[in-house]
Image (cartoon, rainbow, N blue to C red):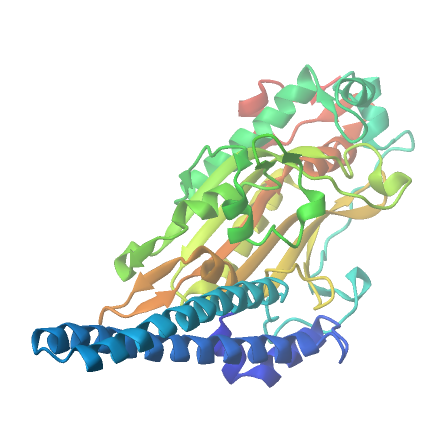
Length: 426
């Protein structure tokens, strides 16, 4: 959530950022509306504070007047204080209303894109930040996409997943299950080597947690909701892990904070039909290892580059061709100031598949979370939050299966063999 002080003092900067997100002039009126409601809120607070101070002073005088025997003057002041109570009650109600109205408006305004974010309407306008400059995998003529490999080697069953839960859910079995588990353990071990503390968080979160990281109200329709318990299934480990620091005041020496966690992720995603969503390309439940950083604002973009290097290293070790996109304003997520997507090349499908998003949210999440730190002078500031997929497994599994298929079976990347216990699926 944008800080109201920043919005109030920099309305044209905010509007310029929203234009980069393709807001038209009519939609930009939300900025003016927020400023107007905030002015009302501050005026109401000033009037209320003044009236409360006057009433308190009058109340003190009433006692002194009674003691001095001046009942007539005391009764006059008492009547004034009594009348002020009704006005105070009305002002308090109005203030509560304007504060709620302002919060709702601020929650509806996305983060302001970083200056490096390119203009663009959607994914077709994303910028290739790092291209793949080596030969792409060459497969045998008999090569098939991963959904056919899954059936051939009996390692993933899409039919049983749909039978048990519904379309978009899958069942891993045998060597497919071991491959999935091997990737999870490999990613976690690599994160630990990089200094991240492993967290096993709850898979359900309350509304405050979902609101704190920006899933609510923006992605309400994409989240699975347990109505009786008023809990949400997590769309990513980012939500519970970042919320560890909700309503926390850190010290400067607490930085850097580096956390990682593996969780299943649940998303009620709607999208295109056909090969784009076939097999593991788009599912409602998938495993992911997430890395989360809580950082000093002066270090967050240095840390963002470090996180990109970490994901690069994982894909290099897996031997998967990849490219990095810098998302344009129209494709950048609601809460992010800047996002880089990693895509791996699926040789059998002959297309690029997104497997990771690495984002800097700057103070947008921390303002919602009330996540602050004290500087050396004791002043409080909002921290910066960042997160990245390292990595999302569904499409990684698809690429590993497709790109490593041979006439004799599917070769397992060497870094995974110690985790799988086998070097080939046949």
